[in-house]
Length: 204
Image 1 (cartoon, helix red, strand yellow):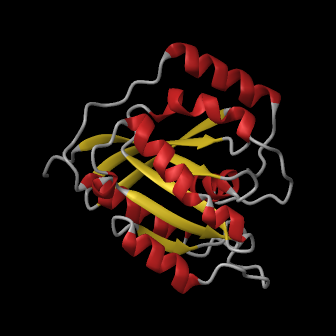
Image 2 (tube, rainbow, N blue to C red):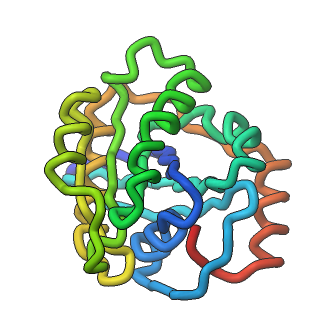
């Protein structure tokens, strides 16, 4: 039997508050959805094992807060990121307009010399809602003009395209030169564990 490689990847979710980052994470990792909203405090962390073309992948997924008062904490969690998902709400144009801000901040904090070469995924969440205000064609054009980012419209509620989109960005990240495994500092893990004990699942 051929040996199967193992690799660890770190994925970061970025976007405005209430676009559904936490719901997307829960749908992808646990295949669950909740309508109860509770803002992420600082950041949260989950992991999932994937089998991509015969390679075992341990995916570390970091869910970050979208509120302004927590954005200063972001750079602490950017280090070692292998791929990034930029999330907006298809019913709220401002969240789409702010994608450029999130992408630029991430690129600056990570010290990317050419952000177009980095694996970004643009997600338009809440595609199940009828009052869409951001047209798919406009988002697709934006993704194409900004480094040919992957793009999907998804629904954390119905799970439409969620698994497909996450697996697509992982595959693109695997095409890049492998990095050393990212080790989570013990102090960060302690804080995350305390946060999980104090709050229930929700959307951010």
